[in-house]
Image 1 (cartoon, rainbow, N blue to C red):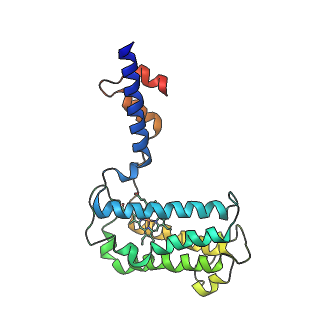
Image 2: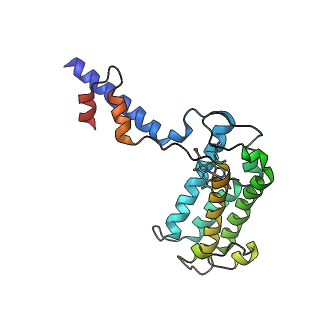
Image 3: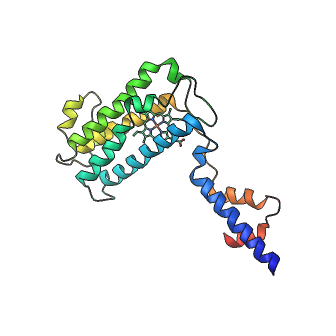
Length: 201
Ligand code: HEC
């Protein structure tokens, strides 16, 4: 009885650890500047997720919230981004490509673009909406032109900046382990009873 209880407690504790590890899998062991930039990128990811929900109508569109998230994105661009990429900082588990320093001009231009287009989104936030039209925004519009258009267009342009940089300067990651595999591996850990693991699951 006592042994069973301990075993169950251990199982729950290990499960909690494994699930927590799952949410930060991308940061596996990252330290120092690599961790710092991963954290900054995660904030960008959160801001873009919240903006996407509003742009796609999953959340009510709110001018103030759009401006706040755009401010967050703008703040992480330009020198605030480039300073997180000191030459040769390729420590495990980074996905940064060495091309960043071979083509620093292009890389830092994209970091500046981030701030510019986040600023454009801020300016355009209260403009007439045109949902779904942003996807067809011509890339050769100037920031000034974009600022007079629907916020949807500015948003799509901003998103394109994220993906332009990732396509060129970020390695494709290994896929994170899926939950059943994680539990499968957990069940094979010495001292963990696969049966009780399955029961908790
Ligand atoms: C100037 C280039 C550049 C721009 C612009 C950029 N990123 Fe990144 N991003 C990178 C690089 C390089 C990495 C890989 C960093 C590493 O692993 O050390 C990265 C990694 C990430 C990650 C993964 C972080 C992790 O924990 O591993 C997320 C999420 C992310 N970026 C989101 C965004 C979003 C959202 C935007 C736009 C709002 C954006 N990024 C704009 C270059 C950029």
